[in-house]
Structure formats: C-alpha cells, structure tokens
Amino acid sequence: QVQLVQSGTEVKTSGASVKVSCRASGSTFGDNYITWVRQAPGQGLEWMGWVSPNNADTKYAQKIQGRVTMTTQRYSNTAYMELRGLRSDDTAVYYCARGWTLNYFDIWGQGTLVTVSS
Amino acid sequence: QSALTQDASVSGSPGQSITISCTGASGDIDDNNFVSWYQLRPGKAPKLLIYDVSNRPSGVSYRFSASKSGNTASLTISALQAEDEADYYCSSYTNSRTVLFGGGTKVTVL
Image 1: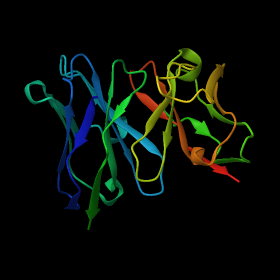
Image 2: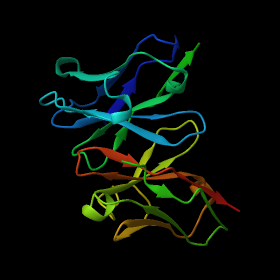
Image 3: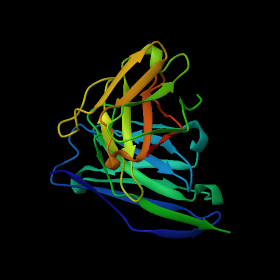
C-alpha cells in the first residue's frame, strides 16, 4: 500500500523559508506527478503546483510563483516544497498528493501544519 | 483563473439524496473531462471520490455518483449517512496545465 509521509509541524517567522518533505513508502514515484495543495484555517483547498519526478518539469500557481520551488529526489522517493518570504497568510496545512496524471490525485500525505508568526 | 464555484452548504436527512454543484469558467470544466471530487473530514487528508467526471476509484461507495453538463459538474450522494458529513471539493484540470479547486461545500446530515 503506497503512502505519502510528510515532515512535521513547522513554526516560522515572517520572511523566513520553509521546506516540507513528502516521502513515498511502499512504492517508488515512478511516472507519477506530485502536487502540493494547502488549506488555510477556515478556508478551502488551494492548489499550489505540481512537479514531475520523471523530468523535473514543474508548474506553479500564479499567486505564489517566484516564492515556491518544488523538487524531487528519485533515489529517496522524496518530494520537497520550499516556500520563501513567508507571510502570515501562508499559515496553512500543506498536503502533497500523487497522481498518475494531472487530472486527479489518489494518494495524499497526512498534511503538514506551517504556522507563520510575525 | 478563478476558483470554481460551489454552494457553501447543503444538508439532508439520513436516507435522502443530495446534489452538490460546481460551476466553472471557459477553459476548465466545459473544455475537458478532467473533473474530480474530494471529501475532506476535519483532521484527515482529502479523499478522492470521483475522477474524470464520473469514475469512482476502487473502494469508494456506489452512493457517490457524478456527472457534468456544460460548465457545471455535479456530485450526488444517495442514501445519505451520518458518516457523509464532511466538506466536499470539486477540482478541474485546465488547458493551462493548472488545477482549480472549488470553494468547498459543507454537507450536513440532519
């Protein structure tokens, strides 16, 4: 059974950076895509972007373009999402998810809470 | 691109059927068959319910069904149960290789 295991809770100050990891256990990334989605307190799901472990291709949401980098390490089956210049409105639970295509994502990580304080 | 539009809340009694709608703009829902639906319970990771408009992954109850007409997608939950109380999100893959989510619909079982 494939699982995505994310890194733990982070508390950061405004302007700092955070790097969240997402490790696949029970399988390799293969030709999957990894997408990152966040949910701010009391808000809905927000798509952040995706990365292809196959060729490192990426696509980011316009809102965070320039502040985010998504990468993967195939040898460790781990994906990373780094967000820079953190602001209070970046406080959210961050999820990674796997998809065979970009149409939908069938396996999700447990979520990582990132809190940004001023 | 703007988020997809969903009703904020829908409620129903046990055993009833409810339908959640999801409306998009040009270039997303009406332009392909890449609509998916997710269930989100507090403290839990999102769960894929429907992919490519109307397909159910293995293990998802037959009580969840979905369809699309023009730029509006719909998710129907039949024989509503207490465990269905959750937030539901639609999602669409777009021509720009981005993904849109709806604002979410809170389902309450009365």
